[in-house]
Image (cartoon, rainbow, N blue to C red; front, top):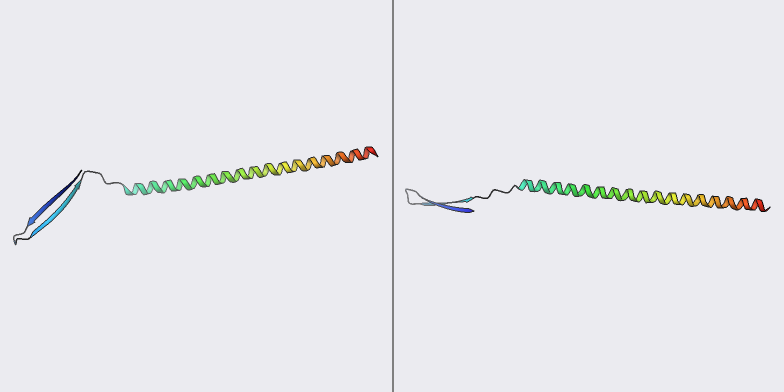
Amino acid sequence: MTEERITETRTPDGNTHTNTTVITDQPRSGGGAKWVGLTILIVAAAIAILLFSKMNNSEMAKDTAVADAAAEVGAAANQVGNAAEEAVDKIAE
């Protein structure tokens, strides 16, 4: 609730001065707390983005490692195939 009080004062010379006082029962909001909360929220969002980015990079690294291992297995299979062909050729001679 807001209350406005107006006080008039007269000087002995006949001059009138008016003072207005506004009284509020509502507590003042903590503006500083809002800024601190907003700052914490921004920092938390930045950390979350960084973590998700690192997780994505680790997933890519894992995928690359699996692809490299598959390529090595394929190369080894080719070597085994070549050796088998050589063995067959030696037996056929």
